[in-house]
Image 1: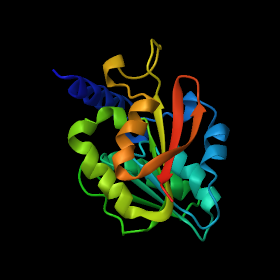
Image 2: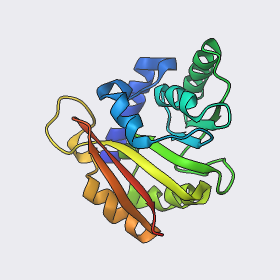
Image 3: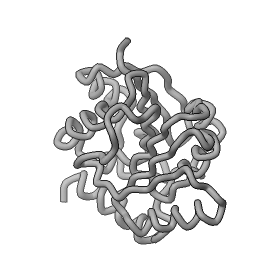
Image 4: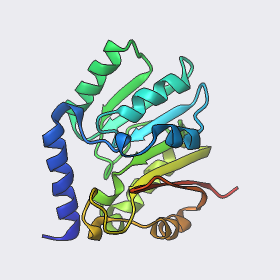
Length: 202
């Protein structure tokens, strides 16, 4: 079994274990630190790509307000059903969920997203095979001043997270994004994880 299949199997196991709640990195670090860095504004369009349980989507919905929108996309339909139930119970009406395999098309309009947020998902993907299509799609849906914000697991011997062979370093992301015209604008240490942000070169 190759390393990406091992990573995908772990992701599937975590999904099955949490069922409708889905996997989430939300409680692995301080959400206030994450959202301070995200700097979400009223009226923003926020894409939670591979949203899992939707914890980030729920908090983002309050920040974008009634004039904004959160798009929560995940491959697991039952997880999205769980998120819709949570949103309904909390009276949240500005989250749109969509089933999406992020290795294929992102079913959103061109130039519609201010922030594309991807938390602990990319280590399950072989970027050498599926990365170009994915980031071409992200580039398509982002507004000209839009940002990509990624949370991933640090490389190292940590008690949580995917196998070492699946982890992606910040430097690897920087190298990967360079041909697409994106440059790093910030980096935040989150303990076991890190958060790195990119935008298009001006």
